[in-house]
Length: 183
Picture 1 (spheres, rainbow, N blue to C red):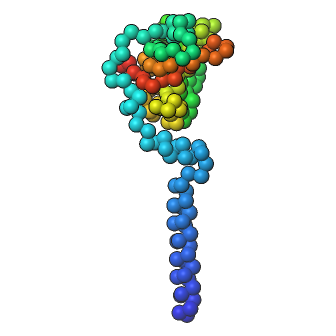
Picture 2 (picture 1 turned 45 degrees about the vertical axis):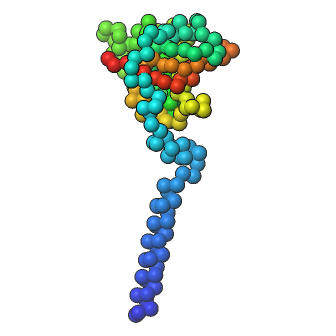
Picture 3 (picture 1 turned 30 degrees about the vertical axis):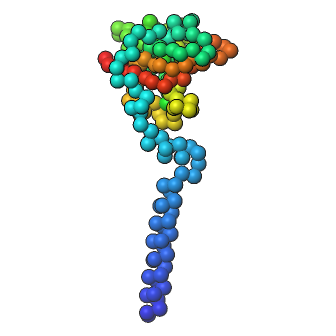
């Protein structure tokens, strides 16, 4: 009888120990994506946010026309341009020139995703830019932009950074600072 009780206690102790070991392991990232997600929650977004409006900025269309690869730019636009203007898990998003109308700017339009600018599709290719928030080393910040900067679709932002152009004429802004305009 004492032996049975000892075996049951020993088995129960082993089971509890195994369960604790498994739950502790679950918090250790095992893939690069999990490691990114773990480190992402510790990124301080305030170091990328301007608290004062930086002043006159080029529109997206002006910046696309005037800036060359590597130029410093200050550009203003609204977040949107597609149904999902975000790069999930990364501080990157697309912006659209303020001259274009989001569906919510058109009276009577009840589009469920007004930030996709579906009424302006012919103008979008020359009126959008990709914004990538980068750290001091020039690496893309591995935190979702919505969380990092407290922004959402149709937020108006002024982005400060360097222009990056590709052969097709697309423009990316490697942003080091972002100002979120108040409504």
